[in-house]
Amino acid sequence: MALFEDQTKFVQDGTEYEHADPRPEITPGRVRRFVYGGEPKVIAKVPLAGGGTVEVHGYATHYTQDWVSLAWTDDVFSHCTCWVPAADVRRPAEGEWRGRFVQFG
Image 1 (cartoon, rainbow, N blue to C red):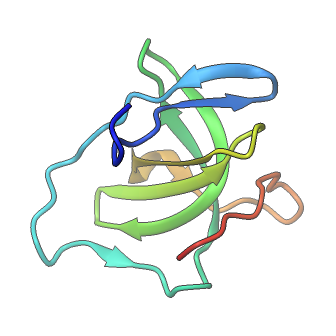
Image 2 (cartoon, rainbow, N blue to C red; image 1 turned 60 degrees about the vertical axis):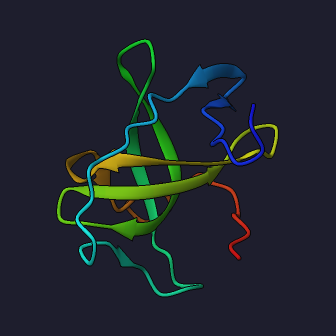
């Protein structure tokens, strides 16, 4: 793995996954960032490299009309990020979110 290469493998509920690492084409000036320290907790269907999705509880950090950048910490405390289609991201109901703290900055 290169020094600045994104990590695509993560462990959740004891199972190792690899996210598909979608890279949306983003028009400059269209990406918005949630307020630092106020990133909303979300639940997302993360696309997997081998097909299918897995539900991940994390924080939304950036967004466009069509995509959301998701950050989460996996079972072995690795920091993970990937872009997810906005249609596959939702706010959790009260008490539903089971994510872990993510250190930003």
